[in-house]
Image 1 (tube, rainbow, N blue to C red):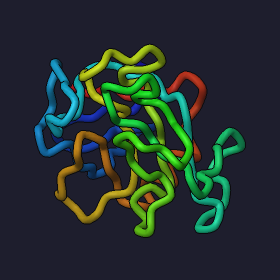
Image 2: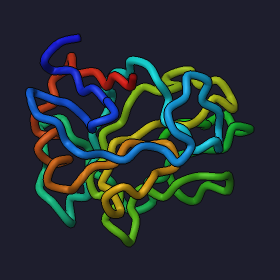
Image 3: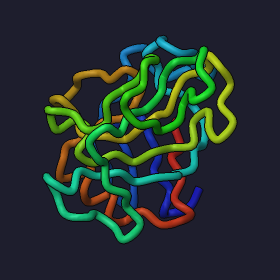
Image 4: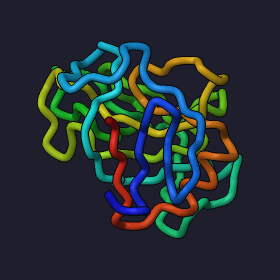
Length: 164
């Protein structure tokens, strides 16, 4: 581990000497993550993207990519675009990235089951804004909005997410 790694522990997400409260998936932490189990996968994950809503907040880092109307994330294990960002119209199962609520205004993208996804192993694990404290996610990791912004601005190319 390095000081620039984000480490999820029972106390929260530790990063750059601070521990931030966070929420994990309703299915707990699992080494054998599957699509739809609601679990957060254990392991070491690279950070491969940073997405943000430019109509709601300033670019959090120079390498951040804006979320546009029609941006989606495929979570259909039967489709060839499984676990990839796609564009509407998209007739298969997906998550809308440009949501009416602020949940995905800022999204840190991990390499879980990417770039060559195994069908059924689970689609991408994001770090995103929480709905409220201690409210579980569908498998992602969620944080208080100001903590998420602080973390996003401090991520480096070698930052990893370590879920223990």
